[in-house]
Length: 313
Image (cartoon, rainbow, N blue to C red; front, side, top):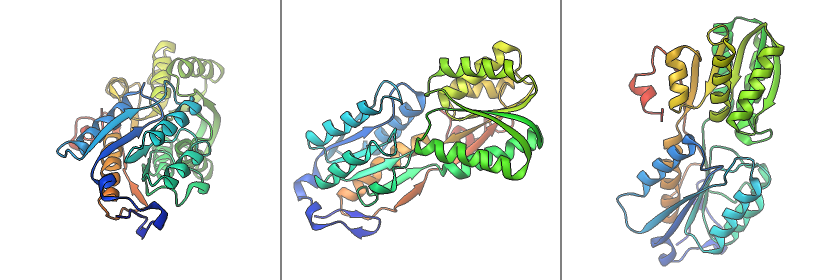
């Protein structure tokens, strides 16, 4: 049995035996396990693996998103123990390329979720599932201009420089703001996806820029730290604050008016569709090269709607 990638038959060197395709572990490896976002990915992956007994699933990730070498080692270990397939959220677009190529050479199908790998990895994985981060960044920028106006300063609180999702999400936010308003960008500042770091950075930015009209926290721990800094500084509600992702803390910030809105990805869908895509490949099916898992802008008006509740976690 061969597996297919991007609608094409994979090379004959990657032929899978029937036994390999019918049994084995699917390893889901994410940027960190210490985040509600990635735990929601895990819930989706568990939903996809339930109801069948031909494959098992494992879920793992480093302690922090910046522990790139640890994630590389997790993929190496998965390959060494001969997993049937891998669902991978790469924490670095370059560092994970060699191990993804090694998986390909070992006839292990890989599905990438959340953040893109560099072009060097093309052909070594079967599908990429993600929010269209550039489109999401532009949607946040439109909301920012609509709510904050087109003049003044907007601070950008980002997470890990150079990560695929950050390049699209923050890069396109900044480009849209610069092309469609007179808003001045302050930052970006990088929290390394550490809430405490984001809190301290935001506190400093607020103190240094009392004339801010807006602020954007670009992922879950960064947005939570940003929200807490707004509350502690007494600045909540005095400027347009928009976060990214949708855990309980961020939902409460929206309900309390600390955040104007949050842009929420389909994290459950990444896990569910990622594992389903690997299962499809193992069963000889075709998968699309890119699957958009979407984003929903959630605010006080729609936080209890079905569309919001389907993505919040």
